[in-house]
Amino acid sequence: MKTLRTLALAAMLASSASVLATEAALSEGEIRKVNKDASTLTIRHGELKNLGMMPMTMVFKVKDKDMLERAAVGDKVRFLAEKVDGALTVTALEADKIQ
Ligand SMILES: [Cu+2]
Image (cartoon, rainbow, N blue to C red):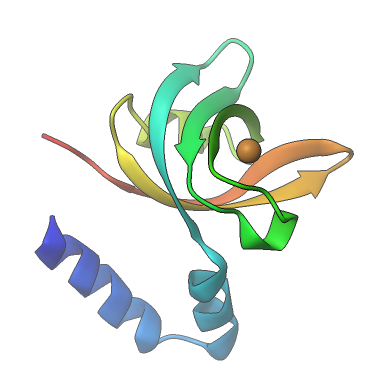
């Protein structure tokens, strides 16, 4: 998994500055629940600096339903959460699948 992450980071480093800015803003988390009916992810997250939030476990909406397929319970993820229409929403997600 470390190799995959390194490759992913290398790909991003080779990409644009705006992608780099997004990467820097990502927070650490672990998927606790995937709710496809409600289109939500429950994530135990670390500090969310952009939202001024301390670590906790909470429910987020997802920007893309595709994220519900890419994330599974127990996955360690790096993600960005933002307020979209008043709801805390995952707008970027990198999942390291635990096989
Ligand atoms: Cu929170």
